[in-house]
Length: 490
Image (cartoon, rainbow, N blue to C red; front, side, top):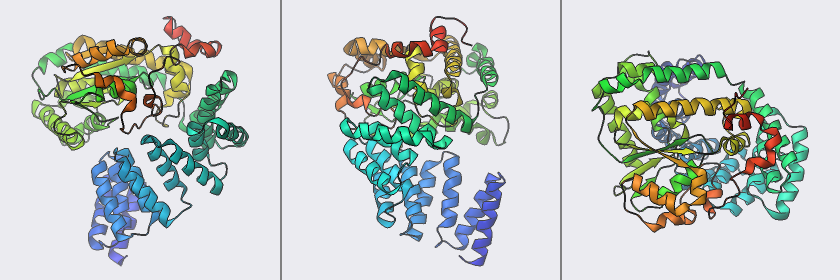
């Protein structure tokens, strides 16, 4: 790297570490311009762009970095991860395989490849990658967790034994990874007591790393959303946004049936299932930029938006959907469950959008959340009382949207879908304003990628064993049972 480019790159690193994102971006950009043959500045730019949810731009920077250093496995791994996050799973698979070609023992590339294979439905291929990784890195938490999720038969029994041993000496990071996977494997074997103990260990480890959930702040946030997005707020902004009916948002708590619902809808020839998008979050957090000043942040920024802002947000959103979906798709489904936070923005920008609200018995839903490996940001998911508290706040906000937003919202119960798949599918299809098509009933045969913890369930014919599953753990689920019965949850 030339001296000028190197100085600018190091300046960018220092600014990034100091939290000066604009300054870091400018330094990396100038470094890349000073010496465009060097990969490092492009990697730095990609890191900042990914943090800002600008994945397409980040991917372009990483592609440029790979051109600069075509034998660098780390760059191909980063590129694979970015492509996977963007839903480009086949392209991600190619980059991970390329990384492993240059560095066969790369843990990051192997894990990325295995996850991409899982998302693509190639279970046995994923097993092979996890096994090979464990040969090189015995006890690796991610590899063990992955193998626990995809192995079966005698192979599963073997990995359960290895995981139990590894869990006794694991760091918090590995204990979380292994514990969630081990709990699921034990639950499949009907060893409910041991399964719950493994999940409890995983959640304690995750909470120790991520910190505790701030229930008081959460309640204040819900109340502030309700205060800002009032009935007069929407009345004063009637007629804003774009009249398109193309966007469909499937919302609810995680593990409430959002993936199943999207799979049913995506089985219709006029519907495209886009998976879990970050578009609404990007639009909300980016509102200060549209206002030309850093403050106020969302949701306070909503009070400063004008009609031309809403129209611009809608145009940008539709442009993103157009990039993802075929032109003949009349409806495009975004199944990011936590978009329930952003329905105020939807009402401003797409007043004709359809909202499918997935509900599920909080005892089953909460148990499923407790058993799942979520990100550190989801602190509420590591404690049963916190899960119940979050459920109560989410329900309060959803009830508010129904009262004041003017949006077309359909409640769909997971239990009702399981009990009457065709009846509920007809109801969903009619809600989207589309003619009935029996192909929606073959959702489990679809050859589309699924990037959620439900990836294997939705590839099977519908089953009812997940309804009432909480009863096997009832003695340990007091906060969820109290919530279901309408009592105080703490």
